[in-house]
Length: 475
Image (cartoon, helix red, strand yellow):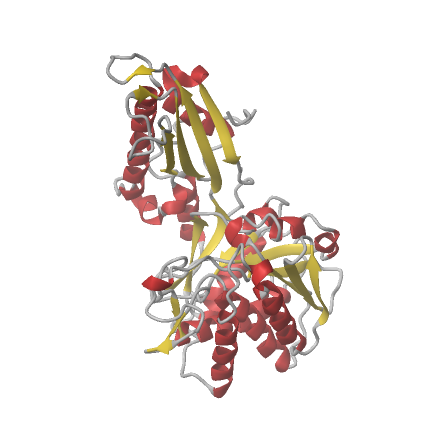
């Protein structure tokens, strides 16, 4: 079982019809003054020759098949790292470009853009360059050719996350090409292996002396596309990812007899309870009866659980099935993927497990492949959060909605250090296709994202000290 906590559990957390985060966001929205939001997007417009050059460089990046688990042996990690360092080296004012390998063959690319006030904490732009595998037979074109069709750039990594890497680099290229001087230093970290948990990338970087030396005050990382043409999404937290296996033991015997208390019988009971909680949480997400906060609910506000592994049976080499079907197995296993929202702590999660196991609790082995907790929720009045959201809405002219990220990203390693970290991928009017076949981003969305960073980063970097202020202020 996960360790217990001394914190007071919020009553009926799992049964809450709205969820704390939806209520907090609704309250924050009610308090915001949106009257100064510009009426039309300041980042739209026809593509320029400069934009076309950015698209060409982006396609070059997509053509490098940086698949997690293959990047070291294929050489794609090294090739990608070399290209990223080349592009960073082309930007005016950049210093200290380097590749640090905390694990051999898995470079973390770092670069610094010094500000005029080194006493201020810095801004870190983090993202990953690895991608997930592909099933080529399901793609309409080669997933590593970056084919353009009807204004759409197809390829693995176009949404997850080479578009954001490009947004950072091309946005900074434009900022410093204009001769802008920023007050705060900006650092960039481009990491491997996020798609397989980040243990050899962002996690090691966040614990390294290199990270400590950066004096980071705020981090930007990956987000998600937004299908709406009127909104971007800013993720200020994420659910904790837990992968758990429940190993059940029971009586064995001949398949022709009525044997009581078998492992499979217990497993079926446990499964029914797991799926009852799953159905309950889905109902909470879809419930519109809880007032204004209902509209603010998203997947990140509820607990999701999915059965991802089932294992039982007595192996046999003499049957077509591969199992001795006349023998009742003495052991069975169910594996689940559980994503835990911010308002459920470890004590409450333990209670959920106890409810699933019930009378079999003392007979079941609980094995964690991954046990994670989330840091305390970020204040809705956090100066960095307010500054980031307002800079998007006032300078870009697009609404920035706040959400909890529904799955896991490298952001958790920075939030664990007490830093405000915001997941942001400025792609609107774009279907969410990360990890999907025929992943694409439109040329328009890619270029708009670059323009967003070029507008927003200088505002964040020119903010003054915030140690004791409740509201962000611009210098």
